[in-house]
Length: 326
Image 1 (cartoon, helix red, strand yellow):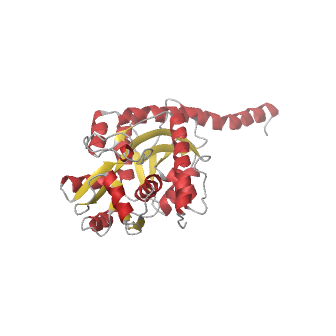
Image 2 (cartoon, helix red, strand yellow; image 1 turned 30 degrees about the horizontal axis):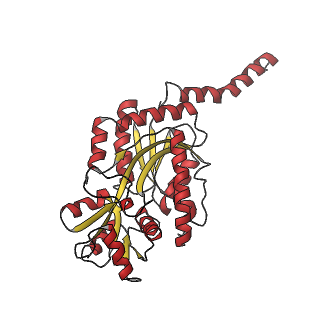
Image 3 (cartoon, one colour; image 1 turned 90 degrees about the vertical axis):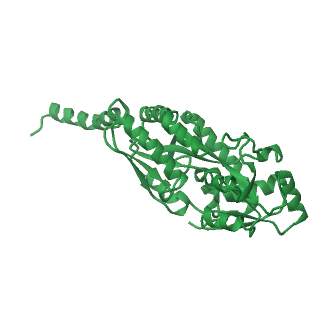
């Protein structure tokens, strides 16, 4: 039979146990087991490549296995729901991009809250898009392309890798800010879109630099401008769209998020180690070869950035009446 003192002692131990575990997770013992990075798309894409580059470096630093787990489907919503419902101990990390800001407007309902269910860790990289036209296009600049649109109202088309992608939203933002008419032609991926752009079956694309740069360098396509407000190092002589269309600023981006109740000490360590990985020479140089810019940030800066992306894309998606099925 338990006496009262023994009962109280066991009760205190039971109550303290979760806090002891949290403290161990938050201290120098973290990570004490394998960590998984959940990618919301299939292997081989920009998100997957980014996760593996950073994950490999973190694995070396931590001395623990870092597993990249691909959970594609529903524009990233399946992976987001999985991470939102995972234990908040730092061992499940979500790598995500623009969908974190846009999916709430694109889909009729979500099973998670993009802001309330996640704690931001750090920004990772940004990748600009490039505005490209066929070599047969009369437009040799953004200004000339706008004139081409105005001279061919209702006839100009722009390609994308699918509804709701940054390629699609780039076109919609261009229409909005340049005050031109273009018809969206979605494809099932970037490759078939480029295949139709080269012979001039469509008039323009706003594709990710890593996907399009080889075609521009091989003179298969004409690059007019990059989509960021600053020029890009791998094409330093190419102007920005914003130099002609003020306010235009579009890029793919990736960040690390974790479940919302993850201990702040774990987030702090993950933030510091990831930011260090981004500037590690082998990682940094590989990203730059891909046309990506390593960023890094504080959790607060990522939270503010996410809110700015939500504010930017909400009106664009609403005005264009873009809706996707769950």
